[in-house]
Image (cartoon, rainbow, N blue to C red; front, side, top):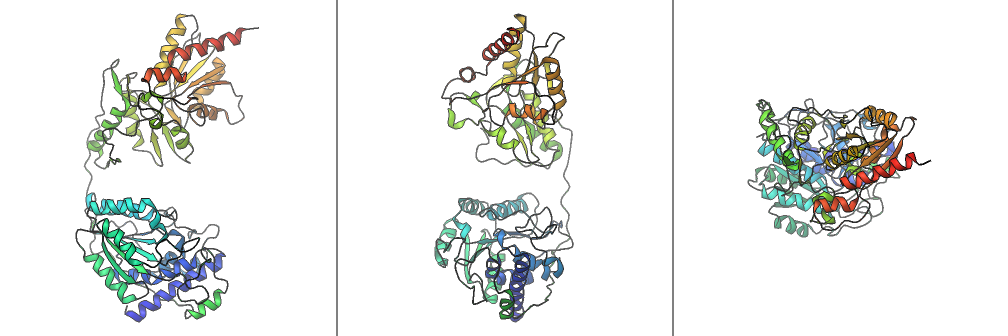
Length: 550
């Protein structure tokens, strides 16, 4: 396309963004209009993408970080022939693929859900890093950001990392239209202020008029040819560009245009230009991933081992067996994220995750696991690798006894009954993680006193083993949950979920961390919280006495 055609395509994208928002009665047309020329030139000249093969490994990746500008993205899809005009006008309606903020669940061309500002560039950095390090592919990553989100700290963490990794396959395009949701942005149209910050993080910076299609074209070419550095194109634009009633005006964010027909006429009317987007230069497939036998870490039964150590070794074993495992850490590779519960000991309460099970259980479709020993941990890690959705496994810092053999199986949604007899008709102790050995010790002490109890290791906190819990409730009458966690949302609530379908709810008693812990040894911490073997046994004795008192 020549310059005139590119400018005309930009106008079409503006018009279609207005039309889509007007049809929906909602949306962000003015935010889309500012970036229309940037999108037009990218689509026509620089993006390499096969819309018929969105999974093509050599496709460029495009991330719309300012996801509220989705009318622009959908207008671009129409120009590329991926959707038609009828579908464009279903924007934000029930059953439409064109949601208010784009998500990959409906559209195969969308890389990631965006809209929460500050997320797009970090995602783009991850994709670019994958292209460089894992896929060895020549695809380029383009991230279209808004200037408002440059106030987010996540953007600058991503910027620093991109420079450190020399991600010259990454280009950030910043639509600097100076107007945010509530008013002017921090630096307005001061491009140099933005450039100084990006240069401080080691980026190659390019400052342009974001409505000059020739300047945009040259900037994209310069970004593609820059070696050893990520590039950022800082484009001065006007929100609502091309329509006098809304151009560069405050207070119009997230509102369809009141006089959409007049605005469309002012922009030259409806067009139906089609763009033949460049397809990838090479027809390549991903390299084969070698596999082999899985050899999980093993311990001798009866010795002590930390579940966090087993977790660290299990992904290494998986990587050898599968070849497609990538491990990431926040510079804590030799410490992990295992500081859960009071059992971590002397580090104190600021390091004790006491709400994590509740938080992860609340995520829709999540799997939440809490192993008690090294073998259970390794097996569950291997199982997690084959699951979908968010998977969370809670490990512990200190060494604990090896309860299970190396070949024991632990299906997700299951549990293990560790103590049971024909005489345990009074109470069941339900534990997980660090409280399992404590529950076993308490059960042994109680049995010696003539009070046999059942013990369940509820390692699968979500989904929970309803059948085993219901059977225990029917046969013993009372469930005592013991958890190194706050009482809200953790093991106790997970057990309660087994009885939500109008079944009789058994007597349920919870032992959990209700006080503010300090610094002490792990065993002192468990005792102070009332969740060690001694406290469990005392609670059981009290419950049994209450049950037999006339």
